[in-house]
Image 1 (cartoon, one colour):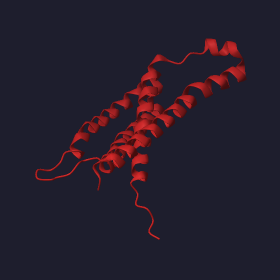
Image 2 (spheres, rainbow, N blue to C red; image 1 turned 90 degrees about the vertical axis):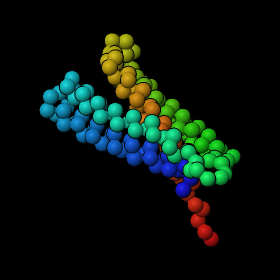
Image 3 (cartoon, helix red, strand yellow; image 1 turned 60 degrees about the horizontal axis):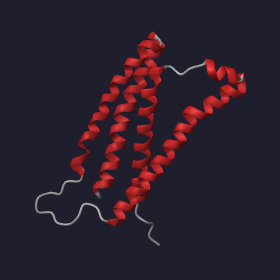
Image 4 (cartoon, rainbow, N blue to C red; image 1 turned 120 degrees about the vertical axis):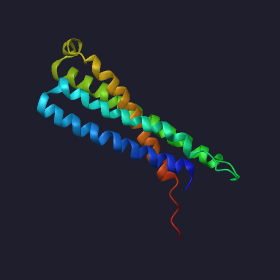
Length: 151
């Protein structure tokens, strides 16, 4: 298996490991204690530090010859990165602009000026953009390395 493909699968596993307890704990704490105490569930996002192990996928074993990535692999990586950024822009469109337009058209432009977004949500939005990009990148890599169907 190609190192980039192993890395993409590893990223998806890490995100599943980190997001499952985070979302579960947030829902439980939200129902039991309310939104203020529920934000402590985001401590499970520290599991994303497992992504620091990514360098081990690109190391060559002693005595192994050849390159880790060739031109095709770099082209797949670049296309996956571009797709990831396209999806991040769609994410920002859904997070920022759609709610703004909904408030502006439902209650008028003055409602947009008075309703603010709590400051503590901004790191969550940025973290969400990171997760959206990395998951999209990983899925694009996995689908790009699929073998072509044999005729």
